[in-house]
Length: 245
Image 1: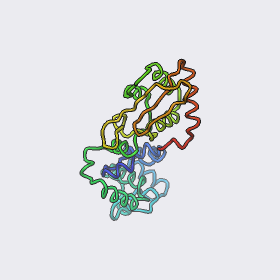
Image 2: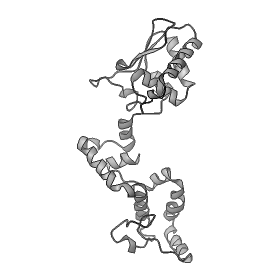
Image 3: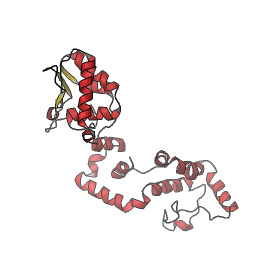
């Protein structure tokens, strides 16, 4: 999420540190943001015969503002300090590299095209959706042939972990992640191409797929157990190379 915030120019917040490093948040940031927190921390440092808190990075190697080594943290500037400290903690060591990445990204996609997106939406467009909800999958699927066989297929998916669901999605579409949701499945011309299930053919055959059409072909079996054995076999044969995340 941090990289996508940087790509959008969204300021990094103390809350980002809380998610990535709870210990740093609880010991270095949260106490400062409480009323009187800056004064209390400066008093503690003085009692411990330690240097006062100034506008430098957590390890003291970088100034957070010009002349930051001489700027004491106080009640009036503690929020600014917390913001700068967290930003430096997250990207301080790779600020130059992040800057190059942002510049290169915007050479391909102008920033003005991204103004209506937040970081999560941009992440979904770039990476797709890895968490697969079977109810959503079933609601967006187009079924041809036996609806009973299709229902057994989705019941089988519900009993399987995310890795198996991703493999099956890759088996049917060529990708183990969703491009911004089920509505994002499109053909090469950008037209909607929903996931389709076709239940027909030889009942003894294994499931097959046509990824260019997002089409999964299921054998018209007469029992749930028979279909589940065939689906398990497909996943067994697919291996980890089906995970295209």
